[in-house]
Figure (cartoon, rainbow, N blue to C red):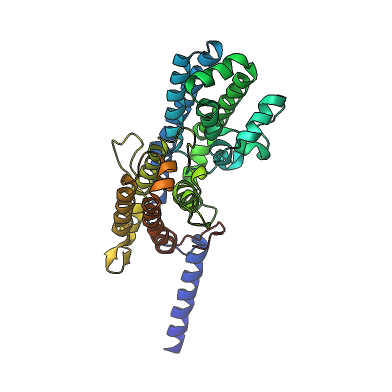
Length: 367
């Protein structure tokens, strides 16, 4: 009898060790991570980047037309192209993985506030290298916002600046070219080897695609969306509100559009909704459903989606101009922040624990 028990114990030990080796994270849930990665890559990430790069190409065409014929009509067309590309950017910004991570794409694309002083110094000197990290606040969509909307008190003044000084046209073209180059590099990397590498890396270790992209998604939601677009301007992390920190500071009346596009993109990604909106596949949502993750008597995936709805509702109460909202209606901004923050706990603590994923970035704002 003792011998039988000893053999059984040894078998159990060997079986347990074998499982640990097969799955270093200890997450033996049998969910098809490969199917989720395929849905992410083929139906969300790649189409998002394709649309973004197509809009960047339209932006380049409009910038060339404006430089060749600097008129009010071409300025308006360029602004439309800028806003379309800026809106498309909101759907890819969260995917800071692969080539985008290597290039630190987000930092070179959407650091705000931009530095008008440094931009003007670059234009005056004609000496600048946009590949340097020190120039991140002098390029990207926020810098274009300044050049298209902030260098004059009215449209006539802005057009006159470009007509009188070709250095402004040169800098404008350099910024657009830089955006186009970066976006195209990331898209081409996905279209070549990286898509397969991403999908095939379907394990559960820290370096796996699911764990890495889940962390990128959380970082984006917490730092870029919640804090960057709402919390910092509203003064959550400072002693006073900071209206000059809003996105699209010079255009102003589009900051809500950019925020809502970004929020909807994070919601769609959580739910595995295809970029074109025509389908839905495996996702963080279906993963939680598969695990039957219950939190306080309710399915965690439902709690997260309900909180997303609450955040959308709070955002809908904001005006189009976040600068004006911070100045005159900051309680609404703070209310939107609170609803966004409530999902940080559900995602960062409850979801990550359920999926056995560890946070891989440093939380420096105390939440």
